[in-house]
Image 1 (cartoon, rainbow, N blue to C red):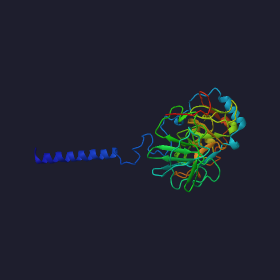
Image 2: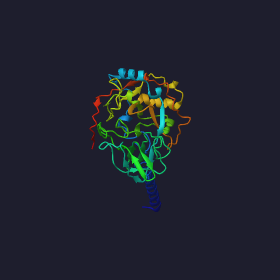
Image 3: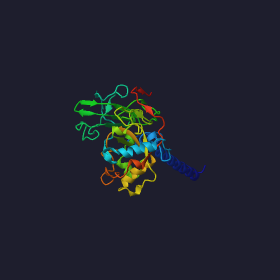
Image 4: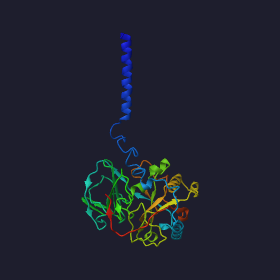
Length: 344
């Protein structure tokens, strides 16, 4: 082979090697850039949570109506929302951590053996409980502690927490695997969680980043006063109910999914943020998860890039009435017995 030809061949080979190396570098990113996570979620701390086949992530805009839809909506229209208006609660904190210290807790009377998980919880320094500035439950509220542990993709949700110094007291803890599709019975048939319906809270919370981006891609958590929830009854995806719920047979059961009617005049709402939420209510609906007075639940903007101020206010959806909704087919009505059987 002549020297000119040999040099040309070597140059071509060198270019090929460089191109191949560049391609390999592009396809093999450094650990920690998000590519090592489930391809459905580049960041485990961003919404939507859980895989796309999780029930709360499914589009139900064309799902059939439940045979009892008319009766349930009429009941709610007569009773009204909690506080008499369709309001938004922005008090839920969702903490996300890679290396927070694990802490054990003292069980309180709000910890239910069998239903709840007894394990150490990652507690980030400088975090806060629902409705609190820190980890002390000063206002005697629900004081939920919610933590996502990034390395294990585990979601820790605990009800009625109070942490003061070295003393950590807590109620029911539910640990969820964010990479898992759970069976219809969730963590277990007849089993509660940090919410009365036995559901995870986090995937049903919408946040400021989602709203600022223009789309919420999951169902939304909603609550009602106990007198407006069907007594001791739940439907999927819920796994639990309570006897504190005192509503009759036309009251919605825990787990019920209501969908904002497609005919609702979304463009008439007072803010772009309100319109984003309304469109999510038309496409994914809202799921009855707990008892209380403020209808819709959003996430605090403590850890989001976007902020609620100027984006969405607590009363921006106040004109929406129960009669603007319809009840999606709910399937079997389960009677709550209190006999929790945990799923494997």
